Image (cartoon, rainbow, N blue to C red; front, side):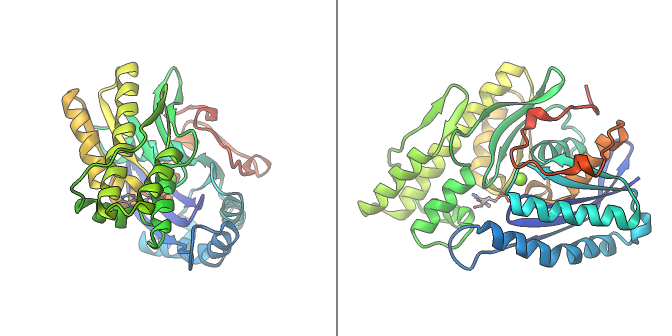
Length: 331
Ligand code: AMP
Ligand code: MG
């Protein structure tokens, strides 16, 4: 079965094609195109216009790169939520149009669950992980428990990526500033105290952001501030992830989302895993960020387990929660 997945929840669009090889996900193509705002953060309407302009091309490229034609496609999946309304609507419209024109079934999938399933699908030893999903807008610790993917901890305010991007914008860095902050942090030598906000299993980042901005106003070294932001925020993320692993008695941890590219975050989580005798996994870079292949793979798993979706059921859901998904493809 050849499954194409269309992603477009936020600033990136993607079209990926996968096939199932003995229960593993084989990626045939995975094209990603990102909207870069001219200045400031993501403007949702502009992002959606970018997606509308480029989606048809991105889908065509993914078909070509997989050495297929449209008639080879058996299933079309798309990210139904959570995400930015205008972006989700544009993506869903493209997916519906493709489904109608090639007369193949359509499945809407949960974006956060797709980040977890692509790890299980492409990394053989990764079977039942706790996912630390750190992206621009989303920050969640997710694991399978009692028949569902459940959120064990999450941000109470902004996503970790947004926190890094907002701080970066304030000091004049271009969007996305996460990678630039990572470079600056390498030159940091002094740890500056910042709020470490964990409430139960949840985390808050806006207090840390405000305090970091105050350090800028006090003319502290930018490199030290970046270093301190990373040390504080990533330690909090690692702590919540470890508690979820202890609670669920799972021995695998998986990273997902754009911030998972960060080497300091990786090393903190990897150290935690080693100390617990657990396995540490990160998907390939293009499967870690927002991408179509992960959407295609989850759509395939759902379809294969009997899920069907009518056009009416394919409406988007900006607040599509991870634990709203009925998990029919595993136990
Ligand atoms: P996503 O929303 O999953 O596409 O991820 C985008 C977010 O990842 C943005 O907020 C980026 O600033 C952030 N990001 C990307 N690379 C890095 C990095 N190396 N370190 C920290 N954040 C990063
Ligand atoms: Mg994502």
